[in-house]
Amino acid sequence: MKKYIVETYYTCTFKTVHTLNNLDDAELSKIDKRTDGDVEVIDVKLNNRKTKKIGGKKEEKPNDTKVDNVLPKNVINKINKTEKDQIDNAPNLKIKNNARFKMPDRRKGYIQKAQIGDHKVYLHTGEYDDGKIGEIFIDTNKEGELVKAMMNNFAIAISLGLQYGVPLEEYVDAFIDTKFEPSGNVIGNDRIISASSILDYVFRELAISYLGKEELAHTPSIASAKNLDIENGEDKFLKIVKNITSKGFVRSNYEEKLVDLSDVRINLKTKN
Image: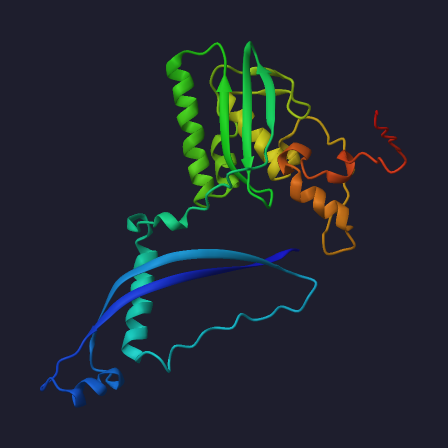
């Protein structure tokens, strides 16, 4: 089993209120050592999350930064209580703008054209540098302006959710097997034969390409089931291919998509 460690970084803003009998340099020099102040937590902000893969190596325990020597105990208890209250009241927690992982300006992805019944559907995807999907666009024909606008804004909403960290699995579970017209046979997709709606087709395609959910496909995978593990003897060339190739387009079957040109010789002659 693969294991991962997720590190979450927070920034806490708080203030302490002390009562002084005399306002002089002697009292002010001792104020940082006092533990009788009233603590008020102003804001706890999510800064960033980092994911580290572990496995095959001994698990290293993360170094917890101790703040006991820096802050009084009542400050630490107040911060812990505030974080717990904010987690319990998650629907009321406002996520800051910096929690969104924006897409790179130049990104990878692929376009899949298919026909559901008499309607053509074009699915566009955008990926992060690591191959994770971050946005989708859905174009249709033979639809009115209202339907096209709704599909376009629906795709924007899904893209924003992906960029804010909503797992693709949640969308797949929500929209798979939804039923509305157009529906029927699918032409142009080698893994999906029929769909009960456009949303069923779109998220079935995304689940196969980015999540490897072969149980949602109607045809078996052509590529062999080889275990591609970067840490287990994968060559440098394949790593480069993974960095520049759309994960959804090749459906993680990089070796099957490679073309061996080692025996091809090109003779370039310049004309005088």
